[in-house]
Image 1 (cartoon, helix red, strand yellow):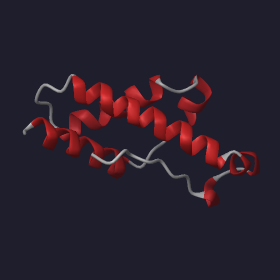
Image 2 (cartoon, rainbow, N blue to C red; image 1 turned 180 degrees about the horizontal axis):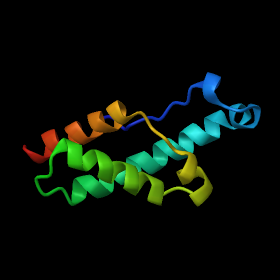
Image 3 (cartoon, rainbow, N blue to C red; image 1 turned 90 degrees about the vertical axis):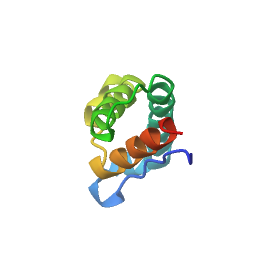
Image 4 (cartoon, one colour; image 1 turned 90 degrees about the horizontal axis):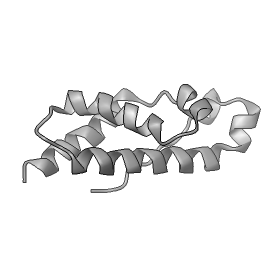
Length: 91
């Protein structure tokens, strides 16, 4: 599986966030990757819809609370990661 990457839309960022964009994207991607690994390791037949919510919760748990509070990922992209977990679990 390709590691999930989080990219931020520079148009939606404040000037300070734009300066930190690379570091934020790296931290968010790392947290999402850790969440994917955790959920994949305990996968027990849940649906992709169920895993999407778990991915968000688990990703936020790997972030500083202030960053986690502002993390609003694209639901469709999280769902794609969940679909990949389900597909791997069926092999």
